[in-house]
Image (cartoon, rainbow, N blue to C red; front, side, top):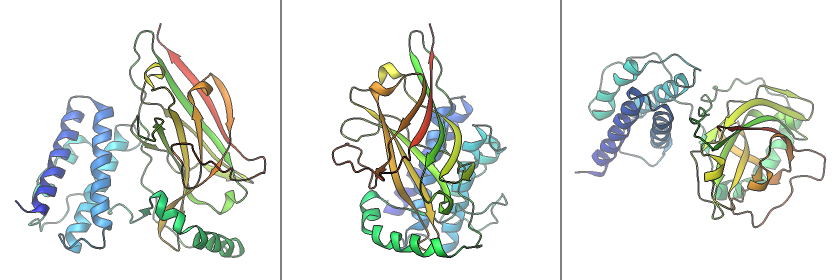
Length: 303
């Protein structure tokens, strides 16, 4: 079997896994599977080196990724895209190399926005700073394609004697807050080695900007009971925004919260320079100004 057929087989298996979870009512698992597959398809669509698929086939894959994100958002009550509709795409993903009919839904492929790895971001820091300086002096009225909806997950079911954590991201303070395009946060929980403990979640785009603040006012449900989080783990918040000239989404700064900081009520945490240091070894404050990430913690304990 060729590599491309193996890839298609993997996508099909992932699609079936997601729709099975969905039909069984295992929504957290379904959302996770849909988002992983959507990212894999988007990666293929954005790959300049891929000769395995024609431009038309890539467009179809991009539309399937859009539908996966729409279904994922539906499960979080943000869209209305039914499981029955999504299932119509199974034969398309299975037969992508020979599919030549019209796509069944009037959707656009997921916007081609490159998300850079931390190392790549570091190499582009200088260019970004020059670009920011230029942007500060010139307003732009260009319209950008809307970012895909956030990937926030619902709260886990409660368990006797166990505690769940809801983090409300209230606002972040930045000197150039007004210039950030499509700002959002990526939230992850990492162990001491920087390995993911939970599914990574993205917030929707921030609700508003005001002076030196970007307001989110959004709840993030941590996907593990507090008692089950490994010793030394930390919750990371990466602030990301879109770079129109470069057509990629970049991390501007990050913050983190350690386990001993988990307690009910408001908390204000410091911002650090990128690249995100998940191992917390070489931390550099973003600014000396009094600008922070403002959060509010709620603990849910089922006695």
